[in-house]
Image (cartoon, one colour):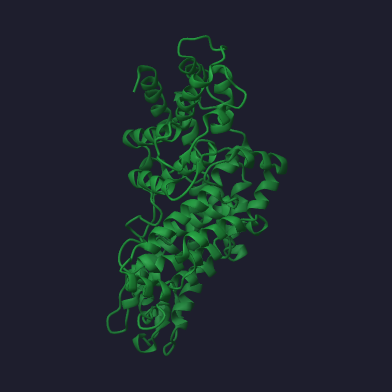
Length: 491
């Protein structure tokens, strides 16, 4: 790393950790529309910003909240052609894995399809909520049957990502992926297993301080005895009456009468979905995801009230959050996690991706940075706070990715067109201003702009036009520096 680059790296590392260049000098705030697009997607394509500018803040938000209005048929058709396991049933996935000996094909295809949707889909808020709920109902899909089960689990989350929380909760309780992951498939009256019951209340609904007791955990575990998987049939959810505990149960003050069957679990889910602690827990996680690592209490309360009033309608809660004053004043309160950073770099720079190799490269960098889809090893999901993701080592890895992308080091099938990025600009000053608009879409501090102009000029006058060969090299370096800067790292 040359001296000028090192100076920028060290200064920007401090900015990324504090959100300001120095005490009392915050980074210039982005336009509210840019903030909205950044927080509700995986990066901003130039044409999307133009469309959003035409629709306005409210118009763009309402369009994203109604994803059926956004045509993604070409993308979905291409995914189905290239990744046939996406459309297969559990029975078909297990049959093919057994017959071919390839137990990881569905895992690979789901992971690649997830990344492709995040890069190319126009339904960016929808994809953001698919990721949010996948993380909320986290299932690691590397181990054993989860490799096959996660494909159907993902389909279910995608169907319900902008719907009612209670529908998603009920569907997840029947998900073979979750039943296997948290051992409820082996939960029987003669030997209750509390794993799912505990995580259901602590992680999925009430929260760790949600007011439940150990007795509630035990009762909920008994309510879900017999909720299992049909391993001898279609590998889907199955209720086994003979494995169910028929006794009376007390859950959060409610009585589940003796002699019931599957109704016990269904009633528990209804109780939890309507509980004020669940409203508070879900509201807190949503506000943390979209607004601030330290969720503003007043906004959390407003979202929780909307949860209760609407029956847990996701769209209603998102509308409250994204229209709030707290959201519009939250610039630089959230940092991009690795997926948002890497996918965002591809989207913002309009990189061309051809064939399967680009996704293998993206996969490798996401693995290095610690956020491959569906790979968090615990049921609490990937962390959603800056402190976990940003440190010197992680910053250097992101810096290296930015230069690998800009300089064409990601291999065959990945192409950043430096001359297209430059447009008609040829002088260092014009190049810095143009790429700032294209890539980071927010103003720079004067000292950062001056430093980038000096680096791009490399000792020549800042208004001197560069020849084509020099232009390509300087644009690549400038693009990498902007993508590695804190201006791009903050959501």
